[in-house]
Image (cartoon, rainbow, N blue to C red; front, side, top):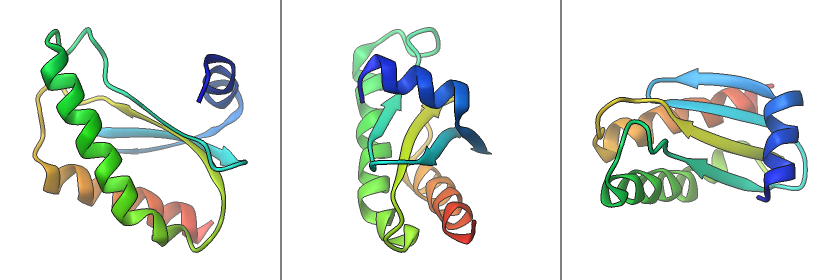
Length: 101
């Protein structure tokens, strides 16, 4: 996703929150983006670890959308590094909510 797409999604899209993820979405081409704030995680190693965990959880759970196409931007709001199981469970719940809409 480029900056223009992200800003448009944040402005006009809907939001679902499941700790530690805040997910902005709208019907669209199926673009996907992830952000982990530098304010909460100063070391790039931790930010990259969280982004890898979120991307992997999305890859494994993308089938829950049932073939529907959404532009999705995931923002990590947690203050500490959560384990993969917690991230996976939160993202699965969010994707189930999207599929039910």
